Every structure is written in structure tokens, then in C-alpha cells.
Image 1 (cartoon, rainbow, N blue to C red):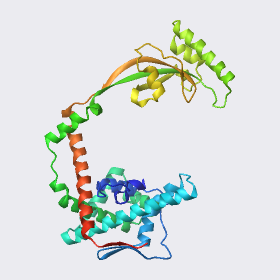
Image 2 (image 1 turned 90 degrees about the vertical axis):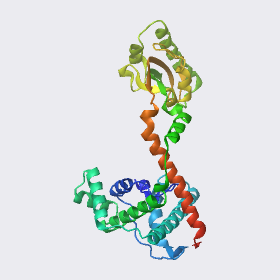
Image 3 (image 1 turned 60 degrees about the horizontal axis):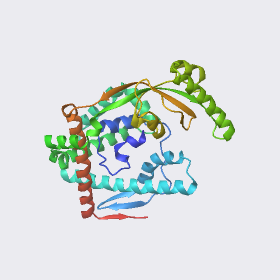
Image 4 (image 1 turned 30 degrees about the vertical axis):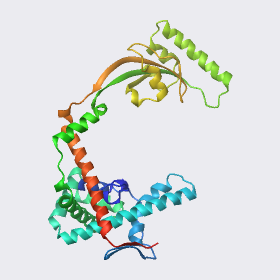
Length: 337
């Protein structure tokens, strides 16, 4: 869950997200992410009167490097991805230095009680005892002192955002209504199809005559269905899918949740009808629409709070990015390669 730590998010969004997200992510750090200090250190960036050191950059980048290495890239591709991450992380660290300078200039402070209260929230939400929290931090290579320092930094940065950004944002009823009207497809009711299937598998490497034999068997099953046989019984007898014992029951799906060829095969069907024989990645299949339900459909009044929060967060992200870019324009920043 390293990627959920707001400070290290590699996106063009503000890094002062919910403190609880930070706390929960930090409290559940997986083992094996601790990083030993580099034997050699140097300055990698100057931000006004502050510096960013190589050790600081490497410690942050290491949280992502292991994820990249697990993806099985070629040597060159892996180095390319890690370089991109290093530059994004370095830019995030520069933004943090600028924000920390603003914190000092604004006289914002955090007392120990605020940190204690935040830790108590973490423990309560995770049902942790004090010892549980310490064990989780130790597993992630984080000491309690480091954890408290990180919480302090995040509280300070959230206070800064509250002063500089959030206090100036107003989301009106008109904003919410416009968003709802422009995104009706997200809130409209959807048809969902209760599906069953019969599947006969053919290996990808199977030669064409053998594949035709499988298709002929499927045609025989289709004929029985066409003559009125029970889909459930035919599925139990002939289907080679894992759900055959349950009469081929698949579940409830909207069309946009299905692969395009399956979507096309059932979209015109009514309850009680079967599809034609459909070739899929898994094999030949026949689908049966057991029933169709109308689900979802949420009104503006039901969505007001959710849309308002969404617009608020989008506005914070946008204004924060604009604000931090303004700080960059006025700052002395030098990256030392």
C-alpha cells in the first residue's frame, strides 16, 4: 500500500490528501520496504534556501522501485521506468520543500496533542492496540519517531492547504446540478442480465478438424435447447465450465461488464431466450438470459453530497496545482544531475 501514502503519490494531484489515508497506509506498510542509508550522499536539488539530498531521494524512490522490478520488464525498460519515477519523486520533493517554506512563513504549527490524537484515530480505525501499531510500523521499517514526524508534516501541510486553498472554495447548488445533468449516464438505471452458459472448450492449438468436432457437439446441444430442453439440465450434462454443476449459472451483469462479443450475443435477447453459438477466448458458448432487472438509477437529491465532495476535491486539486506552480515560478530551483 506504499502508493497510497499521500506524500509519495506519483500523480499531478495535491499531495495533502486525507490524513487518515496517510495514517492507514503508513500503519499497514508491508515488510521489506526499509532502506539502508546510501554510503555516498550529495545534493540533488536546491530549492531557495533548502536542499534535497540523494539519500532523501533514494529512500522515497525505493518505495516504488520494487514494484517496477516485479513487473518483469527488460533491463532497459526497467531502467527507463525507474528514471521516470525518480524525476517525478524529485519534483514532488521540490513541491514539498516549497510548501514547507510557506508553512514556516505562515507561522503554522502543530502541538504534540494533535499528533497523539491522530495516532489514536489510526488505532481506533484499525482496532490496533499501541503494541499492534508499533509492530506494523516495525514491519515496514518505520520507527515510532519517524511516524510521528511524518504525521506532523502531513498535519502542517493540510493546515496550509486549508488556509491557502480550501477556505477559498465554494461549491454551489448550480455546480452540482450542472455536473449531474452532464453525467446522467453515470446515474441512470441499468439493465442487468441474469445469465447462464454452456461452454465447450477447445485448446488454442487444436487443429481445425478437431475444433469442428467440438462445434458439432455444441450444435447438438443447441438443437436440444431449441426443441425445448431445460437449459439447466443441458448445461449440467454437456457444459465443460466449472459452473456446470450449478446449471451454468453465471450471475447478474450489465452489458458494459461483458466482453464485446458476449455483449453482442445477448443484447437483443429477452428473458427466456438463448444466444447463438458464440466463439470466445474460453471456447464455444451458448448464453441463456434467465431474467432482466433494472438496477441503479439515482436522483439528484440522492447524489448531491457525493457530487459536491467530488467537485470540491477536483477544485482543491486544480487550485493546489496552480498555486504550487506559482510558487515554482517565484522560487530559485536548481536540479543537480
